[in-house]
Length: 319
Ligand code: UDP
Image (cartoon, rainbow, N blue to C red; front, side, top):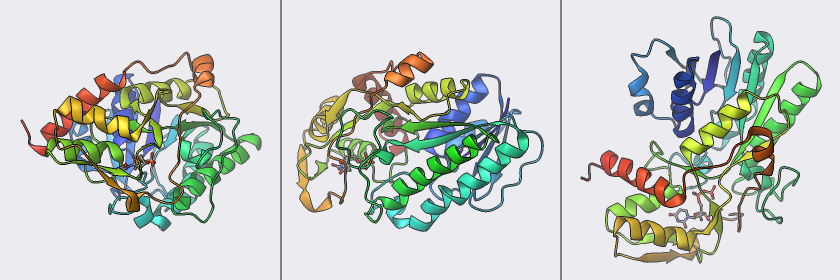
């Protein structure tokens, strides 16, 4: 297939590029570097099956030649307002990427009669009242809250995609991505994984927002990409959760990172830093992914963290 991937220079996008190229596809990567990072694609510069276009997905997209698939992954994704890369600091860009960007990529897929796959998110469930979250759960979301620019853009995109699908003009897929981690995450995007690993490698205390009893379920990037690739090859049009169903408190997660890195600086509690509408619990029900895709994660947290910490050490110049 000849595949257009928006957000190609991002953490997930760049890993997905690698997988698509590995599978023998031709990839056109698109990014405007608002949160993506050139370094993530440097290793592909000489790959004859990869081309790159610098473009904002919210503006008109022009790609020459026939496309067999369009994958829309472009969006800021960190909720942290302390980072310049967090979506609270890029609210209009985030809403445009998940509205105009979705229109543009859907239209491109329609014109090309190609497959379409959208990177949605567990954030569509908001601060959920049901655990674990199945795709049938409608969510508990604040449309005017501090995370709304991201949550509502993704929810709008899902609605738009279903409208295109139901009009029988488009061959669409929606993956709901839960917390994912691995090499190539931005060190400075303020999300919990890069923040904790950086603090641990600098022998600093890990900053827990709130009491740390909130939970997340962390999926290693290779597992996630495998689930997405399998979904791309199916004809499943309703949303599919992809994530790791092993739930952990942020407190336990921090202690695991301190143990693996040998950091003895401990933890520091910042009750003021916990954002409004920060989900209390998040854990995917992956029954649909198991049934439809024969997929489940293989890399456990310990193993994934060791790989991620090793890559962060290199990135930070720590031997
Ligand atoms: N968090 C934390 N310390 C940090 C960064 C984040 O305790 O330095 C918490 C945050 O409040 C949230 C969880 O870790 O409850 C996961 O946050 P992240 O920003 O990674 O993304 P989210 O899962 O909320 O989208």
